[in-house]
Image 1 (tube, rainbow, N blue to C red):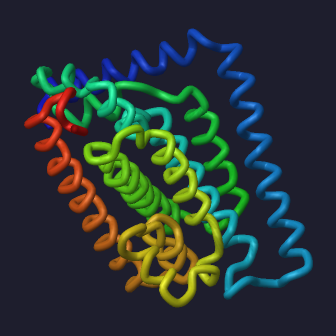
Image 2 (tube, rainbow, N blue to C red; image 1 turned 180 degrees about the horizontal axis):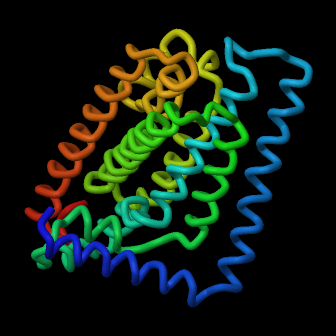
Length: 262
């Protein structure tokens, strides 16, 4: 990315931050509600692990790290790249036309075109949960940062790939948003829940295993094989998502906003 695009990226980020600060009251109410919701969810897991020592080898520390990573990347995507979440709606409304005439990178424009104001609070909450989980040492912190980046790329890729189905499916945006939330929920569930054919699903067509499950093995067990799998899964997820997006975009460009669903 050249200097001009970096400056443009920074300008878009500043606009999103200013927009969030302009709605302090609504931002505060939504933040309190979201954090309370997440705290209740974690408390339920505390109650469960009071009676059950582990679930398929997962203990409370696994849940905390998985949930911390999950809510962290959800917050990052919501604040810095919420446009990916609204991609199906933009396709339906023909809003991509504006970005197609812009010389700046298309995906960057789409991603930063909107923001969710609860994002920063979710980022902070995710970091707090990760701190509570432990495993933060001089050695593990760089690894956790790397795994967090991989988790973000995997989640963003899932959102982009499944959001791009809007190029083929009309009025798909509501269903897409439900799918994104379900990806988050699945990623924070113990890995043992996904057995038999579901185990294949979470590493192929819905690769949420590379978002939390496999990175957890790398972090907690110092498993180099899991680290390698995380890197491979992240790369393949990103390439697949970009391919699906570009294929759908060609369909959109050929029919533009009027004929794409016809």
